[in-house]
Image (cartoon, rainbow over all chains, first blue to last red; front, side, top):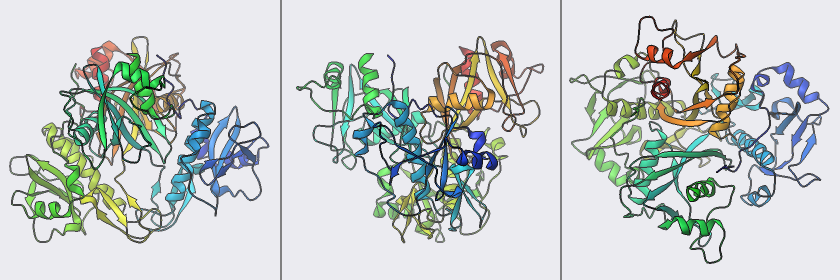
Length: 288
Length: 288
C-alpha cells in the first residue's frame, strides 16, 4: 500500500546553495514574488483561500530576521522571526492542518520547527553569548566564541511490538479517553535505531525484541522530531508496564486494528489522527 | 547476511529509571564495583588487558561531574567530566577501536558523545546562563530560566544511489588518496528520511531518487550522529556534481565493489574502514 505519512510531501525547493549566497538572498528578499509565511506565534494563519497564508516582504522585515524557506516554482518563500509577540503555538493547529493539502502541511512543519528553534536558541550553548542568524536562517553563529549552531532534529523511534497476529499499543495518562498509540522514545547517543527500539520496548513494557523492521518515517514539528516507525516481533506477550511512562498497554489483533482504523463505533480503542505516524504504522501493519 | 555496523552491539544496561533516582545514584557511586571510564580528553585509554580502561571512583569525583553510563552485569559504570584538561579527541582513536570487541567500542561511543555534549553545552541556549548536570548525566538544567536540555543526536542519511547494477560513490577533497564513500547529509527539520535522501542525492550529484530503501543504522560518535543507511534506485546515471561538496563521483559495478571490499590490490578505489556505515552499506549491497 502507498503510505503518505503526515507532514511529508513538501514541494518547496530548499535551494541549499542559496543560503550562503548573500547577494542572492538580498535579491530574493527584494523580488516582487517573495512571500512571508503568516504566523501568530507558531500557529499558521490562513489566507483568503483557506490555505496557509502569506504576505509580501515589507520594510520592517530586516535581513537578519527573515529565514529563507526555499523556492516555490522559483518564487522565494520566507518565515519571519518576530522581535516581540508570542513565541508559542497550540496543538489545536492539528485541526486546521488536517484539512490542508500535504504540501502546505509539510511546508508549515519545516517553518514551524525552524522558527521555534531560533526562539529557543538565542544564546551560545558553548559560551553563553548571544548569537545571530546566518546561512539564510539555517543556523546561528556566535560572534564571541565563533561556534556555529544548526537547527536541531531529534530522532525518535516509534514501534509496534508484534506477537503472533497482535500488536502492542500503550496509553499515556494525558491521552484523550480511549486513545492508545504505538510506544515511542528518543534515540540516545551511542544507539542504532534498532537498539533504541529494543531498549524502549523493554523499558516501557518488559518485552524483548527478536528483530526490528523499519517501516516509514515522518517529521513531527512539535517541536522538531524525526519519527522513525518500526515493527518488532517480540519473544513473549507478557507485559511488565513502566507505570511512570504508561497507564496501560494492550494487545490488539489485526481485525481489531482494522475496525479501529475504519472508525467503527464498537471499536475497542481510538488511535491518534492520520497526521500522526502511529496511524500510518497501524495502517501498514493492518494491510499486511 | 548478518551486518554488524560499527559502534553497535553494546551490552550495557542504560537503566534509565536510575538516572532520576538520587539515592540510587549515590549508592552506585559508593559501590565497590563502580568504575569510571579512563579518558584523555575524549580519547580512550587502555587498561592492562589492552581493552577500554577503567578506574575506581575516587574522592575527587564530585556527584555533579559523574555521568552514569549504565550497569555492566549489575556493576555501575560512569564517565567523568574533567574540570580542566583537554576537551577534544582525535580521529586516530579509530585505529585502537578497530582492534576492540564491539561491546567496548559501543560503550565508548555512547560515553564519548555524552561527555563531548556536556563540554559543548555548558550554557543555556534559551537564556545564556550557565547550566548544571541533572538526570545522572543525561541532561543539563538551567537554574535561571528552568529550561531543560538533553543530549543531542543528529540524524544523517547516508545512501547509495543505484542505477542498473552500479552504485554511486563520491569523494570529498579531504579524503585520503583513492578513498570514495556513500553520499551523506544531515536530515533537516520538516523532512522524512526518504525526503532527505532524495534531496541530498539531487543536491550533491544531480540524480533523482525513484524510491528509497532503508538498510541499516549506526551511531557515529564524532560528535553524535545517528547514521541512517539507505539504497535509492535513481532515474538516470548522469552526474551533475556539486563541487562545493564533492571533488568527484563515480559509478561502481557490483564486481568492482566486491573487489574493493576484498581489498584487492588492483581494486579501483578504497572505501572507509569497517567501523564506518558506508562499509556495511556496501557489504549489504554487494551481497544482494
